[in-house]
Image (cartoon, rainbow, N blue to C red; front, side, top):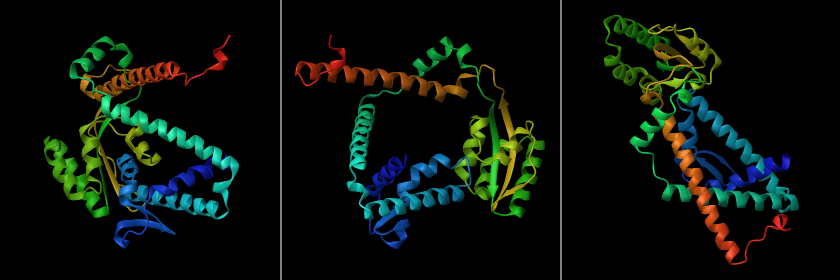
Length: 284
């Protein structure tokens, strides 16, 4: 287990280039640096689940920990350890496999058409029943209690007047710390189980009825306000638009499996023809 952890840390070393200017990196260990561009995909993936500043801190601290260990492992000569070398070689092979598959998919995988998505939906209605409650919420995290209270009052008045959908984008632009997350959560349904990483925020959501607005809740330096916009209970058969992306993903996965299987069969046939492949356990 320790060797595999060290191997993972060693493989991280080439990922970040050294010697950028002070403005270009978030952390440095020796000659190795971590830039905002390096962590952007990971940060984007967590942006709507937790405070982005907290996520940034966790990512950077994790990288620093791994980098310190990796560099110490190199200083102690572990890169030349026989077992580590075997693991590095095996991991390199896996990286090459993943790179080839990614390139194959990128160049050859067609996106499912609207007709294919609609046909799949019509043929699999019972199997598409929701396995979780799906919620659409209006959420804003602000930096001050004053702003949070103002958001709550504005939401309350707009709900009474029936103008919430109209004023929501402006409210987000003026007060939300993470505007993209606030807009996405209000526009799209999400499974209840993946809304927040915070147990308390999830508990707040669980106790809200449609149109009900939570009290202001402070966690860390952020003041949170949540309004339940709409719900779809687990077990119901959803309208197509609610799960269009899920169906697209299922169809894409099936097509990807078929594409990889065909490519492997082609490579296998070529290798056998050139006598570059032997599978001795199949020999009689």
